[in-house]
Amino acid sequence: MVESLAIASDSLLPSLIVGAGSNLLLLDDSVDALVIVPEISGVSIEPFDENEALVVVGAGESWHQFVMQTLDSGWQGLENLALIPGNVGAAPIQNIGAYGVEVADRIAHVDAYEITSGELHRFLPEQLQFGYRDSFFKREGKGRFLISSVAFRLSRNAPLNTGYEALRQALAATPEHLITAKCVAEAVIAVRQSKLPDPAKLGNAGSFFKNPIVSPEVFESLRSQYEKVPHYPQSDGRIKLAAGWLIERAGLKGMRRGDAGVHELQALVIVNYGKASGQQLFDVAREVRDTVWQKFSIALEPEVRILNRRAEDVVL
Ligand SMILES: Cc1cc2nc3c(=O)[nH]c(=O)nc-3n(C[C@H](O)[C@H](O)[C@H](O)COP(=O)(O)OP(=O)(O)OC[C@H]3O[C@@H](n4cnc5c(N)ncnc54)[C@H](O)[C@@H]3O)c2cc1C
Image (cartoon, rainbow, N blue to C red; front, side, top):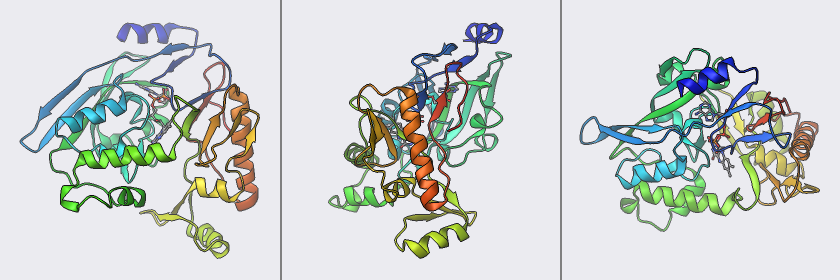
């Protein structure tokens, strides 16, 4: 790994670290960059005591398989994050989250090589500026580190998080005392499969946009027009809105431009029905962003990382 990083550092080409590529939109068919895919495997479980363990996992492991492996060994905490595509190394980058849990809630530390020096650094959660789909690795640390492993603090009996409405419904038939972490993971998988297109069958990068977080004034103005607007109050007083709801209300659900379009069931997902180019998908994303802005004066920001041929980030 250190040798690869030295090559990357000395190379005239830009370097790009790729996990499974599930959160990337390439505008061209290829990139002129040194692409590094950290295929670092291995899972080690070091119990602190009977109830808690430090679980350290290589960046190249599949996220979903790792989650299921922890549950099979009786360690819970990651069940709400089942079936998120991608590899473990990318999980801290945007602080993956789903159904009321963010990966930051479970991370004990992240080990990462600095690309220029090859030095291995250990980052504790408080150093990683985790936020909604955000971390140090998307800010000051952007492009500077290769995550080699992630350590999680998991438990045998952590409280289960089943508060999310869709999860509650999926678990409604199971008596509460019989709900285990594995039941929660199975419910999450069922809900995700019913709502989200499978990227293996219909190309997509999951939620294309982040849910916008707005001031109370902007929210009240929206609520005066749409009484039932879904909203999630944040600890800092601001309000998170559902980007999918805004896109749907802007009349864009199911919109299609050639082979690129907005998914017909989940408006937050931009899909490739066949042969759409990266640029065509980008154009659809831009149309969505512009239409939502015209209708609501609310700016949507992409969650997906958009890259040009030189592996440079492109602003939507
Ligand atoms: C159908 C679908 C559903 C999704 N659902 C969710 C969801 O519910 N919640 C959610 O948060 N996300 C979701 N996503 C987004 C995606 O799954 C996550 O962002 C995931 O963490 C990406 O993993 P990856 O290995 O594919 O990363 P990539 O797409 O390969 O890379 C993503 C970013 O991480 C960087 N990176 C990757 N590995 C490393 C490493 N080892 N070291 C340093 N940098 C690295 C890349 O340079 C890039 O900037 C979904 C995506 C899809 C396609």
